[in-house]
Amino acid sequence: MSELVHREASLYDIEEIWGLLRDVAADISLPLSSAAEQELALTRVMQCLSDERSGVVVGPDKKILGVLLAQRDLLDLALIKKETLNVCIVAVAQSPLRAEALSLLLQTLVSRGAAIYASVSADDKQGLADALKENGFAPLESESKQTIYKWEPPASAAKAA
Image (cartoon, rainbow, N blue to C red; front, side, top):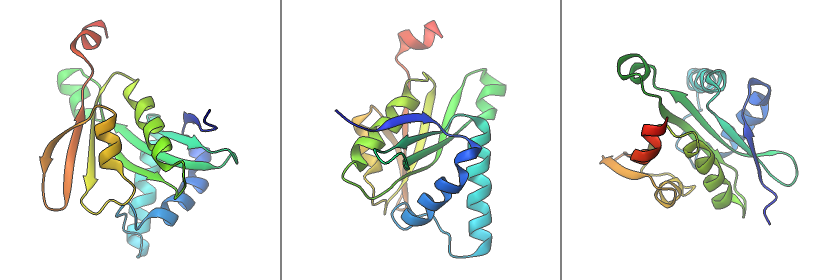
């Protein structure tokens, strides 16, 4: 049985999340080499945490092993009255539990029942594209640098919501 636990991420986690992002920045193509890039990344982290759609996976040592930062798409909410989530950053520490942590983060987000979009860099080294496919996401667009994936709730679930 897994010792991984998922919980909602909060602003109280920002220091530990920031440390994780710095550790895996090269794996997830997150530019952090300049002060401006770091400020931009921290701003995005705070926006996602404030939107309360993000989650963390805590490992057996009670430290954050992975984070999925997501935000509501306010345009969809305003124009079509439908909640859509955009995944901004997914980061999981190098660990034998990496694949399991990715899956747990995605399963929990999917359980919200909203449409979800996620973009995966072509040079992603943490296996996010495979994890998305395993959790029901379908590729939409592919460019040389990234692929966009989408998950939609089943039609019966969408009508019930």
